[in-house]
Image (cartoon, rainbow, N blue to C red; front, side):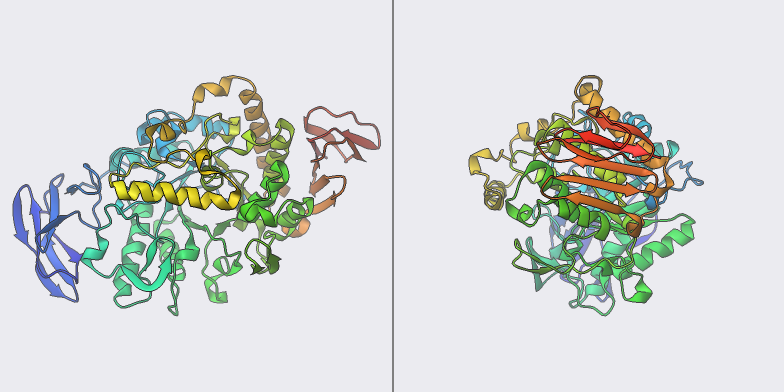
Length: 570
């Protein structure tokens, strides 16, 4: 035996740990805790909870899935990245990917072979969509239930460590998307062990995670320990926190503030910066304010306002939450204010939404024109390149790379991949399958998409058609799009003024009626014509470094054709 470990199960009367067919009674310690001998290394074991076999809530490995036995795995690994430090977020180019569809094999190991492509593109950080074990073979990962164990279809814990190590060898930081606001319904046994959930708050997924009710101290520690495990044992450089607006907590010290303090302290002890990036639809800068100033101290936040402003302008979509966007002014406001809705009335919400970002840097927001949600939560999973013209697509990319935000790409967008990214699951419960199908159809009603447009999320072909085709990279028009992304990534990396995050130094001019926009940051000037008619704009100082298509220019003016853009550098 390797020692003693504790199990928190205040709702159980009797606990046995069964390893290699041998049951051992766990000893009660009080306050709902039991202690037991740890199983032998690499042994499969289960916790018998009042006679019912259950996986360990803190299991590091679930080789047979979330309903099967846990495995006590060694955490030994030959790391060689002690001197690696990820690039600061202000200089970052983040690349979000889904392990199951990034390569045809869909594994941690197969992902390693594609890392040089990301490095050559100029990516500094790889962001993995959730890898915590979830039910079935394939899924997005946001219904994970074994939060300490990598999804077995992706590979073993050591395979995941090899992927992180390979990233670090190439100079790539690695971020992990974690989901602490809910667990999936299938395989979620936490409630049988203790009050991990509370009826005090309700979420779209049912009862909320218990962050402020009775016994919440232990629950909070469960999630904080999980975050620290990924960062310490797997050497991740930061975490992306899913939908933090659904972390309901009325404690004097909010869970996010406690988590930030713990993670930053861990970073100090490891002598490496660790970052936390939040997803939130509240447009509340207090997430980013320092803890001693009454904030939660998070390092950055996804900015859906920038995405929505650009998307609706490029595509003309005005349904659902896009009803709040669509003007050139919205894009200009996003570039200078960060949030478009910073105390303004929202037609979609039918109320005032958000508050001003204040003096926070633009580099504390992530800017993107695609992500897994905004692509995958469409009926057909179309990418923006499938919805607009080649010229407007390039204009959107140029806006992202010249904005004061941290640019983030979603897998395959750098060559306008033909593969959509659709919503797929592999549930085993027929009632859950039907509930998911019906839920997707009703969710899309606000966007005017009919039910027959929605692919069956349970069908394997929905998953298969979302897998990237890497052969497209060498073919037109994909190779041309890839060259555009690569050139813009180089421009940003080589221009300090594009990395400073200073929103107060972003100069924007636009004409709503003529549908043109000019953005100037230091020596770089971006000119965009979103309209259907040619426009003449003053010729910027310097030379045109990127144009689509080529534009005639004289000494004083540049003629921009319909749906086109130019980038100049002094």
